Length: 608
Image 1 (cartoon, one colour):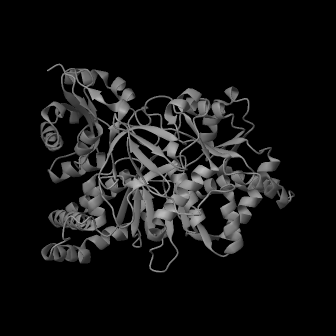
Image 2 (image 1 turned 90 degrees about the vertical axis):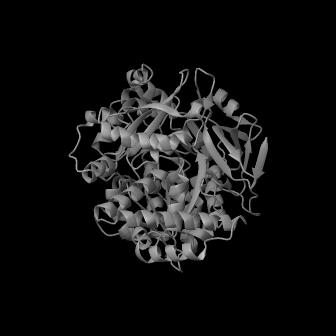
Image 3 (image 1 turned 90 degrees about the horizontal axis):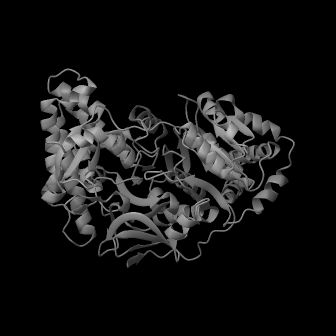
């Protein structure tokens, strides 16, 4: 196996539970504004380390009176909001284990997770979520409470604990060791029923500290102000939890927003004004597409395209210089870039609040061109890679030496290796201890300290990892040609009209694709072409639209051999959705489910 390791800084070793850092910060810097909170449409209000510690302590006392004990599992089924962080730290303060559940989960998924973890209580946001849990209560003998946020359960639980001495919580807290389970986080379930990952306090502390060790100075590059980030990643996903913990441990200020749509996110960014962000590629795709559409509608489409190309060229030239492979941007390119730095790029940064200097991006692959664009527009972008089993990022592009299009080098203290069959193996302190109730899967995945990720990749001469696909997603055509579909799908999805692409071809004579369109982009395209709205089913036969998408397919095919190219495609009347069971909660494609749902459409692709 080819292997690359990034050493960990000396003296960094996990001890105690995750809640300890909260109490330590409140003792050292009680007036530090640690979080910001707001009511719907209200102003942001700072919460100091002392205030947050007191709220956590009061809630922890109430949880004890509600019967939550050391080692109990409590489900958190909510969108990203302040109360989630409050419950996380209150539960960790008494040695309880949190079980995140996506609020969009179906009743059967909720029943499975709560039953397997033997959860004693479940926090929900509203009546609809309470009814979802209530519908499966008969199958959950361990569940003794459903707490509802919009019924002010925080105040009620806190009031219950008013007479409990603080010392009772502290006695519980000092008994929490680094190797205790902190949370059971379920995998996305792209290839089957999700499995619960047993993640310890040490795992999450190692992940958070690796982010702070490797990128802490980047986050603190704020011109003298306190670093601040707006957390909109789902806290049911391990990436969101890792960001939350790193911010608390690093003394950064965090705010929460439950919506990731651009209509909700952009106003929140404008009012909160973060200095750095963690996000998934979907967010940057949406922001970029919205900026391009706005420019075209204002008659500045050509100028925007020129600014985009200048940003891409400038960032690529700077990257080559960083690795000693080029002189950097030439005089003409510097002048072009400077002109757009005065006119176009500040507007893009203003849309993110005006103070963002750096962004870490993970969760799925980011197009290299998109990464170059944002970097060239003044947002230092660091792409990374990780899984639930690695407590979030196990690799990321190092500060000052980004190779966009790769997911970087191992984070401090981690190692990455490529097995003989191309599978990515990883090792480090953030790698989980195994799957709940799945000893066989644990034994197959964890070998001599290495975790076999199931992803395919390659390491370059500088130790940078590129993910090329999933082992289980490999397509083998009837002629015996093997291909990983992810890269081809991403190239098709680079077209502004395309929302999703699923490549098929297993045991078939050639490769084909199912393609969905972005509704907003389609409406804009129709308007600019002087056409009215199309009925969703009309996209199946619209000749002009097919010609446009054929260009996207041809561009993608140009990067692969003929045997790997898409020979036929079908436009679908609507996007793949969670409601259909075709996407995971983290928006990954459920390939088998899509193939079954659209079996007739796939058959017709091979009839001609």
